[in-house]
Amino acid sequence: MVLGTDEFIPLARAQLRAKGLPGLPVVTVPHPIGGIPPSVVAVKAEAIVASVLRALTSEPDACALATDGASPLVEAPGDLDDFQSWLMEQGWGDGLPAIPPTRERVARLLAGSRRGPDEVAAVLVPRLGRATLEAIAANSVMAGALPEHLPVILAAVEAVADPAFNLQAIQTTTHPCSPLVIVNGPIARRLGIHGGGNVLGQGTRANAVIGRALRLVLQNVGGARPGKEDRATHGHPGKFSYCMAENEANSPWQPLSAERGFSAEESTVTVCGSEAPHNINDHASTTPEAIVTTVASVMATVGSNNIYLGGEPLVVLGPEHAATAASSGWSKDEFRRHLWERSAVPLAHFAPENIARFATIYPEGFKDRPAGSVAHVARDWRDIMVVVSGGAGKHSALIPTFGATRSVIRRITD
Amino acid sequence: MHIVDPASSSAAAARTLSPRPRSLEGVTIALLDNSKPNASVLLERVGALLATRSGARTVRAWGKPGSSIAASPAVLEEIAGAARVALTASAD
Image (cartoon, rainbow over all chains, first blue to last red; front, side, top):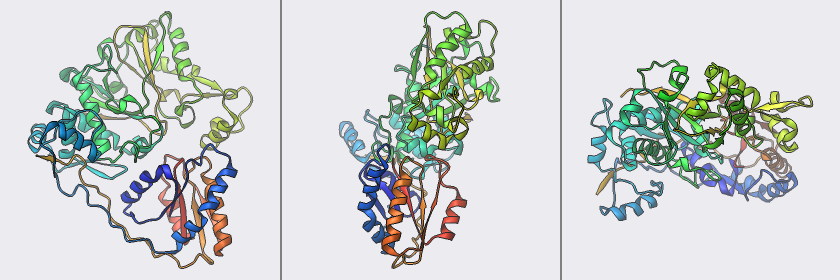
């Protein structure tokens, strides 16, 4: 049986459905159990012992798995305004208006694909939803996508399902994260996926609809509904849509796809379990070392997931900062090595409770360390990801990640 | 108007729960800690009180590699082999 806090009941129930055990008993205590004195937790424990004993020694009520999604077609209001309210009532909307995914519109989106509508591209947790081509297309229609966007969306769906991405945690964590889709290669130019000024803002259709389609697939097929299975304390605006291209034309270095073994003719998506971007303002630096000083200081913070969980914090260098960083001949790897060296926080800056907690999670970094030790923002310099994107201006962006996740790159094929 | 179901179907397959014991007398109780702060405090306190009240033989605890990482199949098998009932935790 499962013990949980009352706040987490929807997630516990969803997990039991996915495991095929909807009837397994759940007993709750009032939220929270973390961040309070153990004596208070003990009192909460005492209050539920009788319920736990009863649940362990009596047969649970019969409880069948719901057969949602058994039919591929659903009746919906024909009036466009009524449709919006209805979609939200079903738990299938994101709050913005959506285009009804009629059979005709879904067929149009799929017309150019070599793959059949029933083919399962991925099975998405926590719900174990079958991401068929048809279901991906339905969410893409809702998001406003066009047929040419579908290959990028498909590759992104397949990428988030890679075990290295740890989708279960990304979908259900309290941490504010969501897959950032980074597009490399000729398809970005062909589809107008933007990598210039205001790259992470509004105003480009391809970026907006590709990122939004992936989000709707994750929410609806994956079953991560906000406030239910998606337990984010705040979330972030990228959970509406989070898609960018690398500004390959204005980068002094090889793009992310080349770093990972793809040729310049190949197009790729890379997904990262990412926080919102945080600005790095530096209008004065004229040397690589000076840029590193500024970027490192933004990265090295006590409240970072990456600092104790590892993972791959992402630096989106603006082209002007990138030019300065490369001005004395540094390769991207040299920049990353210097950045890692400087992105460190003295252990003395952490609260003792956090040192104790992090010591159990990452003992090499936090347990019984000599005085004067520091914690780096990534386990290894190779874990710091750097891409060049954005337009004119003396800004870059730090995009920390969930930590217990790895970025996944996929070639865009069909 | 009909729309294509954007949720699709679920691959979850129903499984049968094993019969519950009538009492916990003489059984081993397993605790699976989700490794969130204080989860072990809650589980161990419930386990200890259960053992006192029910006459369980012993309480044993297992862990996960991290709160965002699933328990390994080996640990689950070990629990299934060693204990008659198991308590686990979900939450912060």
